[in-house]
Each structure stands twice: as structure tokens, then as C-alpha cells.
Amino acid sequence: MSRAFYAGSFDPMTLGHLDVLIQALRVFEHVVVGIGVHPGKQPMFDFEERAAMIREALARDGGLGERQDAVSVVAFDGLVVEAAREAGAVALVRGLRDGTDLDYEMQMAGMNGAMRPEVVTLFFPASPAVRPITATLVRQIAKMGGDVSRFVPENVAQAIRNKVG
Image (tube, rainbow, N blue to C red):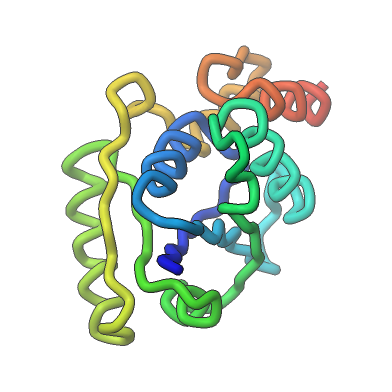
């Protein structure tokens, strides 16, 4: 079975994340979504909340139909290439919004490839409509009382409204 590892904080999951995940599911039989958990950071949502939001967004907006089991969600706190290896992945999935992302991701791909050459990095371009979206901006907008519903799946928008009041 072809398996990929898609790592990120997903705090919160955005329409950009969902876009890249759906693209990866067109290529791989199974995608493991790895939520990076860092004990020193204060996320907006804990791991369980993020995992539930990802699963619900896929069920509602992912168009997976009978392929719901094609995605699993795990937590990791070390090197992404080690988490990918532990998950049995042959590839790391990375989304690209622009040239700045490409420069950074190429460096990461090079370092990851040096550590684990058997795990390749594949880049998926974000669709034009979701290119400007970042989880950081979504959190900032939400904390300042703005409407983030155009940038995140519907269930995530509701969870953010519940969290920030």
C-alpha cells in the first residue's frame, strides 16, 4: 500500500490544508496526517480537538465517500522523517503556496532526504483560491474578532467561534 505522511500543526486546519490533503489522496492509497505536538507551545486547539476537526472536515468536505479509512491522524513530537518512517510512509507531503514556501521546503526536503533517503518529499501546489491562507493568520483574525469562515472548513469555523467566543 502506498502511504504518505502529511505533517503540520493544523492549528487550526485550513482550506489550504484540506486542499493539499485531497490532492495527496489522489496519489496515495493512505495518508497519515501527523500533527506536530510541542510541549512548550500553547496551541489554540489540543491534539484531540485538531484530530477530530480534521476527520470531520474530511467526512463533510473531503469527498472521500467510501475512502474514509484512507486517512489516519497521529501525533508526533520529533523529527518528521522519523515519524514518517514509523508510520510506514514512502513520502512526505508538503503544500506550496508561493516561492517563499518553495525556498524553505527545498531546504527541508534536502535535510530530510539526507537523514532518510528512502522517504521522498513531494510538493503539491495550493489551489489559487486557498494560496493566501495560513493557520497563523486565521488564528490572528479569529482572536481579533474577525470572521474566518472563508478560510477554514465549516466545522473548524464553528470550533473557532466556540473557542474565542
